[in-house]
Length: 350
Image (cartoon, rainbow, N blue to C red; front, side, top):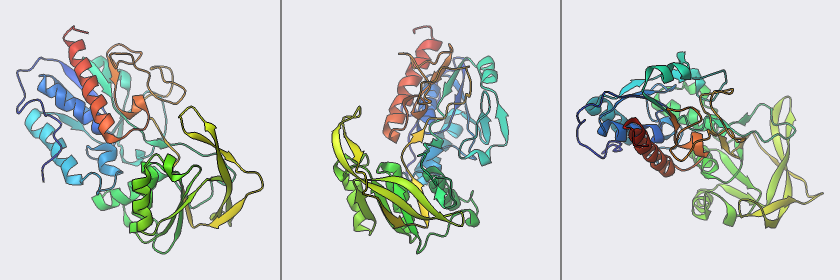
């Protein structure tokens, strides 16, 4: 199997420029940027909190979408052929914040320290938190973050997560709220592990972010699809999930996304039994700051200018940490464009 080709511009490292770049995050944006920058002669060090490079591609996205070995071979080529140095199990953070996947890091480095020790810093930390829905009962046992569940399942296959961490899903009823690719991936994995899976979405299949094709693939596998419903509360018993209470919706005028706004229908409540609930309603950017060192917008994304530079000169950002949740292809593209900007800036051309 051929690996992902991150260093596609050159076959070997050119004459060194003497410039050193720190990349924070070894996901698609960070690895792509590293591939471009080493081909321009710069030295690259990559810091990541996980035990090996690959980010969500390796630890969360199901194998059928991105084979593990392709990611590993691509990351290995950067290390062996282009002298990229990886610092795994290392969380870079300015301030304090708990994110998913934090159980793997063994040391913390301050972002300011990297700024002092390198000629440029690229932040590509992606999305390691999920949006909370904020309805009654959303803290009951049996409610699982989509990121966490996918991480447990994939991490277990990779040998990093013990068997007891993965919930026993065979024969259990799993309800998933949301219809993006994350919801689809959770549904696929739960179905593969023998769960009785139901997806609940507030619009119709035509508006589903994952697309009707993905949803219909799941339906052919036996996953049940409920549309025009929105969660009202989680029903519990002895502190654990027992059912999800839903309201039926109708579609009104388009909202800011261009899709028709779902409007709850009063008095239309009904309940669906569930052993586990997964609220896959969106993931959140996780920049390595919790405070005022870098400017973030109201959605938690790092604010960058036309040079892909943050509010601190010399610190750049690429991928989901700057754009919010996107597909891997867009993160790769953004990582490449940001690397081009970094190279120009280091050469005094930007």
